[in-house]
Length: 136
Image (cartoon, rainbow, N blue to C red; front, side, top):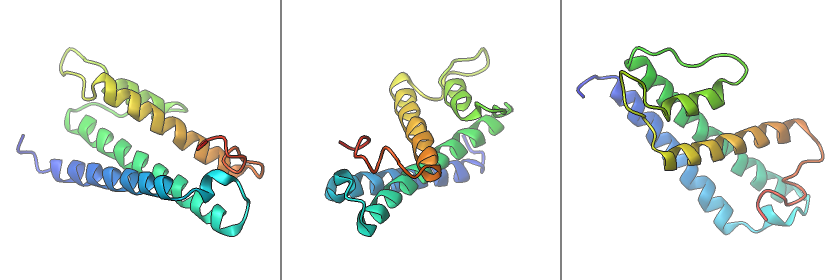
């Protein structure tokens, strides 16, 4: 496809890959995140990991919304639009094939779920991350 709007889609995907890669690297090297020690360094590490995951998933969502726009489809709206977006781009419609296969849909659902956990964490003092639940 020669549509110039693919430039932005490719940039969004590259951003998502970068942020997911950095989150994986942080998780792989930093055992302080898993210890739940509650010190400042552990807090910073945990927040950096969550921020990377949120940025990655947001970049992925932006790419999917741009693709839907190019196809003349409106992006989902309302309270559950994040979940609806993943479900929509995973389904074949009469005018287009599925954008995501089952494996990518499952991965997107997992990162979307993490994004929700990270959002809740930012609002609660006694987080599941500080108790070591997420990464143990």
